Amino acid sequence: MKLFMASPQSPDMHSVLHQNIQALVDHRREQEQDQSIQDRIAGFISRFAGSMAFVYLHLAILIVWIALNLGAIRAIPPWDPSFVVLAMVASVEAIFLSTFVLINQNKMAEQSERRAELDLQISLLNEHETTRLIEMMAALTERLNVSTPADDELPQLAKNVDPQMVMSQIQRASDDQTNR
Picture (cartoon, rainbow, N blue to C red):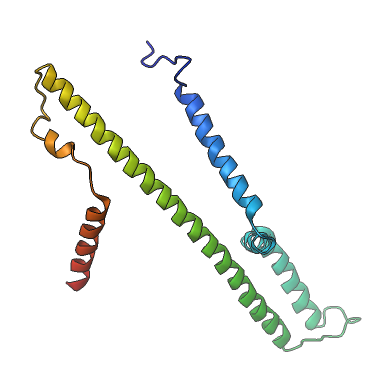
């Protein structure tokens, strides 16, 4: 037995889900295309630095560097017998890698903030729509003279939540917690 029958006017859940996924994919593709060349380079370096290929490459370079500077191949004279140059190169590389990672983290934090704002907007819209549905159901139950277990709660549920008031209460609670 099918509980929800799709009609030509209302798309079924599968097509809505597909549309939502496609919208997200399209949005991500647009964001990637809008990136500057600098952001793309920083992202590539950060992704590569966080890969096993990066680890293997550095391990190979380190082994060869140490072996050559310990005189493993007599035809190549050691150029860094105390490994000071190796330490300096590693330090400079660490500075640049950490900078690229920070750039990438900043970009990710910015994207996360935009997603959180979108989530908030959707939640507020959902709350408004739910309030309207409660008002409609209350009007229907009153008109049909039907009582429900939620009758006592309906006046409270039918009120729109003021986001500013909620944020103020959260801030006060946070301040109270900090002051303890």
